[in-house]
Amino acid sequence: MLGEYKRYVLESNSRLAQLNHVVVWKGDEDYPASLFQYLSDKNILLMLKFVLIDTRKITFLNCDDSPYLTFPIVRNDNEEMVIEKVKKEIERRYKLLLQKKVRSIESYNELAEYAHDVLPYLFIFIHDFGDLVMNKELLLSLQEMIMKGRKVGVLFVLFSTVEKKYLKLGMASSFVQYFSKEDSERYFTSLFSQQNFDQDVVSYFQNLVCKEVPNVQKVDDYDDPMYDEVVAFAIENGKISASLIQRRFRFGYNRAVRMIDLLEERGIIGPQNGSKPREVLVKHN
Image 1 (spheres, helix red, strand yellow):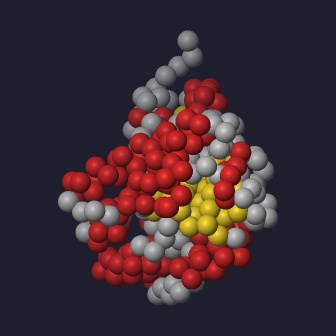
Image 2: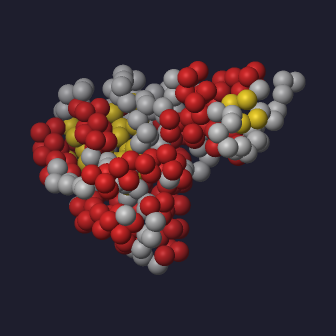
């Protein structure tokens, strides 16, 4: 099956190599979420991860439990913190390419021997990008990342209701393709519609979600806005598990697993003990 995996990765590489940063202007309010869902449905190879920045707070209403999110959806005016983490991830990926002596994510993934070695493409969806252009410091960071991100598979999809001449992308403009909603639909459909997979391979990749995906994409200093509440719940309960977190906080599976990893890394809980809940090592003061 790993041979089949390698073959599909190489086929996907040739298609994903055509991706670029995109600005979608004058699209309707529902389009960002529908595009995210479309790409998620096509993500059988688990080669796509997402960061969703929702300045309007209600754009991605039904997307919180997606297993393909790198962070919880950003709605709380902390765009700068998340953008800084994405910036660190770009630098981390350049170091990985340097170690392998390759010049692009496509060349890097061609060398992958196992599923967890594949570097997924990271899509940064921002709606509405026009809301951020007055923040000069943030805009400069975005311009820099747009110019550097494509080589390492970090791709921005910027949705805006204003004309492109007001988006102030500066030199980064030459790294971006501008589309209407209709043209962007044709663009993504042309790249993702021709995927045909053997059903056994599909099942194999879906099983990797629980086994390997949490380790494929890990951004340094990951935190969760519900971290303090989960810690308090764990201390009160005395034991904790991903399923307990899911039931108590209505998290998706991958978010709950990331939280368990975070608690262990910070010494809040003990190591895994079979299928039993984790022991909480800290107590109330």
